[in-house]
Image 1: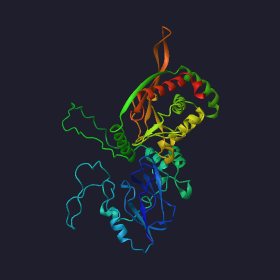
Image 2: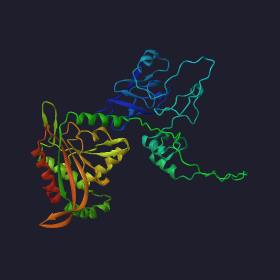
Image 3: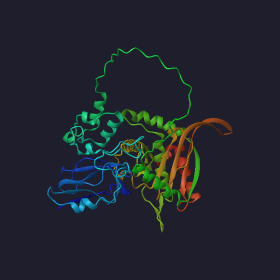
Image 4: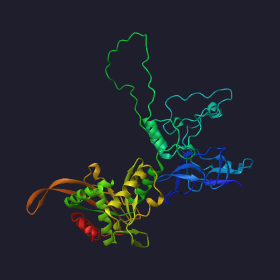
Length: 441
């Protein structure tokens, strides 16, 4: 019996998916559990597995195309099974990869003419009839490779067909691409020329007459679509207000230096952000009115503290979640954030690792940003925007001294958090950072 391959919800917030790459081709044998394709969701690149046995008889959504969750994108069936009804109408509403718009019909005797001008920026040009009819060569066959290996190879300009895979069933993995990067490549020798050198033309005065003007149009990724939708949903209905404090970071910097002397021999390194996350967790545990969410008919105050940490990735940002941040030590928080941030940039986070946060922290201090405001991630009621540590002159005991200071701005959902509640939370956070030992209380 034929099996419909649906676009599955591979993340809790996924509404549509994009085909990054088909790992099986039409005509390939498929066993239940085989990986059929790589799907770009709103957060990561995930693997779509087969839910039946047979032959991949029809691929209804090509690479680069998108489809809503639940749509049929392929059909698995027996070799002699009639799938006409399934393959004929299943993909009619699918959003396929961008192609050039068809031109007017031509007589059969005329060959299609080449388009004048540059190709459309929206996507690759379609195959010619000769290319479509030609049997696939060894060079055209799909290479089995992990998503990370493909991305690294593309960045390095390496042809995967020239790389030997050491993974399961000959799959190319990260270490294979890295080995190919360092492998020596033959260089072409100098080309002899009998032609006499030509005189250099005299420089001409510059003129903008006929100078080409244009732009690059970048296709919107699933992650960027979701970011746009979520931010619109946040700014429109959520009544934001902002509270800013300035914290003396001298004791945190001293404590960080001492702790790193103890843990660096084990390969660990504690950052200022790790102190911020740990102190934020403790302050939220003391002020559950800020560790809360708006749910239309009720305000939900959480018994657990799960902090989402904003991480910049190629297509935008993602928030890996440090679970129970109020109960973890600095070394454990540092390890988790570093490990999850690395996999986030490779789009390899699991859904449970970037969902379920009760509060968020965004730190741009490492980019030299002194102060900024962040947009709340609904249904959470707050987010902290962390600036950089700067040495600035301040008045202490009637004298002007230079102190390391850091500004923190809290964005609050006024439906959940009032000004006094947010201020008390920030006062607790400030106290813990200015006296790090208080985190342990």
